[in-house]
Image 1: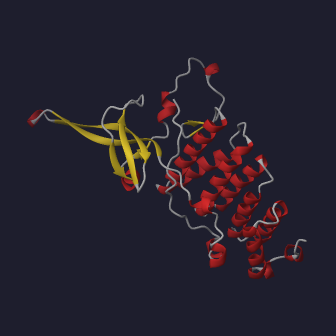
Image 2: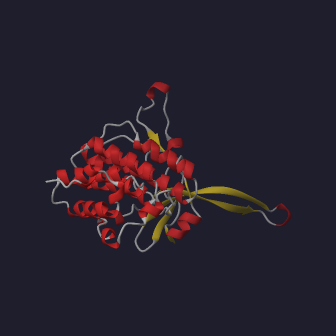
Image 3: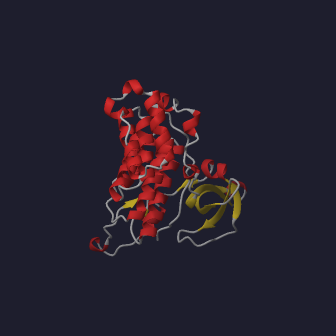
Length: 280
């Protein structure tokens, strides 16, 4: 069984080597941030808690620990719905409402939960579809995207918990996953890039942006986002290149136009004559 859905995008910002350059963005440019960058994906997945179970009394009293599984689904206003479930995802108790802070501090994610439940009668019967953090990246375009987003959310969860190595592994695997992608999947990789850029993981963000570009190279907003990532890496020439690509695709792209004008004024000494040349 494969659970589809989104996990948390509640990771802390991680300082990057280009943070100083990134802070140079003026308040005027800050207003250009697309509204969809402010969106986050709700938590939806299996978590666990460790509980102490006491039996007997007096001298015969025994205490043991047991893992309890929960299906967590984020609600509004910083709350989440927690349903106790068994290993087959069947509810075995009443739902309760918990805070998202408790989800991060008390509940532990179970990325291998589904992987352990899969049964294959033989080696030949195993699917060839890639599996990342227990989520099989296969099925219809919609199912593929939901599972990819779920595994990405697990990476963000690891980042929140300080497990940067495992988080990076998840992000890298998603950037190069070998599946039959559709044009609409460009939005997914663009979203991944936006989220990673906001964590100051600029190189990894670019891998996702550029993967989106292999799916659809005619998206002016995507070119704008690539330019932002290069800018925050202090690679101003590359930022100019992609801003010009954005404007070639859409001369009316106001954010790219204003960003390009600002970049030429702010970093004129770092740019070549070709970079400073205004397009007709």
